[in-house]
Image (tube, rainbow, N blue to C red; front, side, top):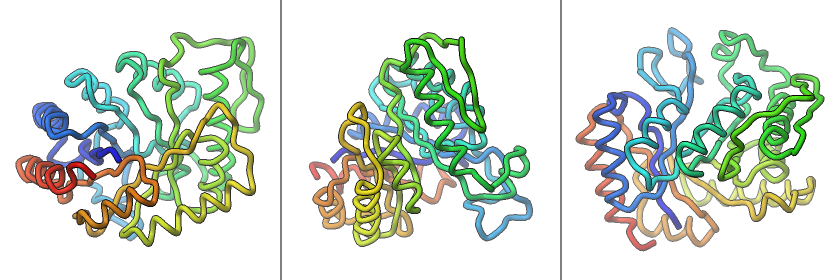
Length: 282
């Protein structure tokens, strides 16, 4: 089971000097991947559904990951997640391919359908039909990345007689986030992997059962291979060695650590060191 780092495109980790220091530390400690979340805007005043205060800084994940790609050549880079309905899929396909090429095929595109209504409204995307929009966008981007003559016709995106190069090196590998039946079906049918979170191995078991049910309901293209599992424990963010072993035994391919709180870069570094030491070899 590999270890990755999540969330360091926000708060005290935002300054470029701190990002570079922490990314290099992550490599030295044996972490293999670095994941960034996304919120374009946040509701003010803060609502119960919002994960952050509106004054908390959070960098655009693709811009942040491009910087990280330039300061270390060993970390895989992932979005955890991009809120896909809020993005133009043709533009995002170009951005993802560009980042994949510049990083030498290290990019993983984690996507989700979103849930924060004020954010979607500010961007001009309705909450309704966001699932269908997400499915169409994934299919359209895949066409641009993989078809000899890219073409796609859908309700929300359509194109023909166009092409986009360079094509991505690593795919890029798509990870679908979410814990709903629709998200599980989307992961099985359209994702190289699934990415989720929870508070315990019991939570993960429930998600894996949902993925198993989805596998009986939708077909999985052979090109996607086996579905990989990326999981992030939250609340508490501290993971015991016993729990980590259980996550591994349940089939987690990549366990993400989330160095909360993100108020002090030095405290983040200590967190990464402590987690790496306690989970080494699992």
